[in-house]
Every structure is written in structure tokens, then in C-alpha cells.
Image (cartoon, rainbow, N blue to C red; front, side, top):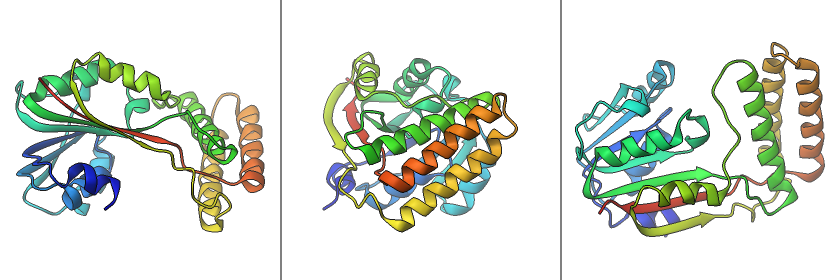
Length: 237
């Protein structure tokens, strides 16, 4: 039994809201592991990513809506489960979004957060964190909202301020794979190359490109572990 199955196999999702759904990756997890659900609604501010998500989930119980997560257009207590994953560092106002999610959640409903963080434990893992943070600087310099990932304790502080009842906290260290896996290194090297191309159009391009080259060298020398991930399952009193 994997971690998602362990957490979700006994969870009746009911009416589920997936905030900042992107291409709907976490919806695939819900479809596979939730004990049951009646409807899943994915919301995102980007019409482009929703156009990718919709064809991946051709199902009458799954729907997508373009919406600002800071002003969710739903009644208070409308959802049985609310979720956000891999998105906190793309939000302009994290507190506002989380508050809106809790408002839209019914008493007794479940709140789920899954997010990578920057508290790595291996050199290979710090490679992943540094690459992600460098990409965030490139995006930001081009006017796209993308912050550094939060520390684990910072995310727990966000949750504590929501006054939820914690059911379970699950850590995924992600440091036990082969850091020199050729396929993974090639994939991330390609990611760096794509961001190097973006960096050419950014203010301070020369410095950004130099940083990208250093990161690529470190990737080849020290390999890569994925960033650690924190998953929190909580309940609204």
C-alpha cells in the first residue's frame, strides 16, 4: 500500500475542490485512490492549463472552471474536501487563498495540502531545490509569478493559522532513489536548457545564463534527488 492509498483509501471525498489545479495532475490521484467522490471541480486562473486538463479527464463527474483562487465564487461550506498541491509558491497571497479554501469547506470537511519544500538532506536534493529556485528567478524576471519554495515549518505555520484539526502529516523525503539515474538527469538537463532559452530574454540575462550553466555542471557531477514533499490532511472543526 503506497502513501496515497494509505491516506485516501478510507476517505469519502464527496464534493471535491482542487484549487490551482494546473493540468489536473492531483485529480488523477483522487480518481485512483479516494474511496469515493461525487464530483471533482478543478479551478485555476490560467485558461491555457485548463485547456490541457479538460481532455485528460473526460468524465461527467469532473469539471474545470477558470477562477481566481483569492476570490472563490462558491458558497461557504459548499465542499466536502478541498485540496491544493504544488502551488503555494505560485500564489501572490497564500494566506488569502488558504482562507478562501477553508471558507468553502463545510464543518467536518477535509483539507489537503501537498507541497514540496526547500529543506533538503542530500547534495543531489539541493541540486533540485537550487534549480527550482533559479527557474523561479527567471520566471519572475519575465513578469511571471513564481517564488522560491517555502520551508517545511513555514507551511506548517500556514496550516496552524487556519485553526484546523490535524489528522495526519506525511513526509516524503524523496532521497532514496539513484541520484545518477541517467533518464532523470537528462530530463532535468532539458528543463535547464529550456529555462536558459527563457533567460536570454530576461533582464540580467548574462548572470542568469551563467547560473544555469553552473547548475547543469552540478547536476552532471552530483546527480539529482527530487525535492522533499509535505502532505497534510486536516479537518475543519
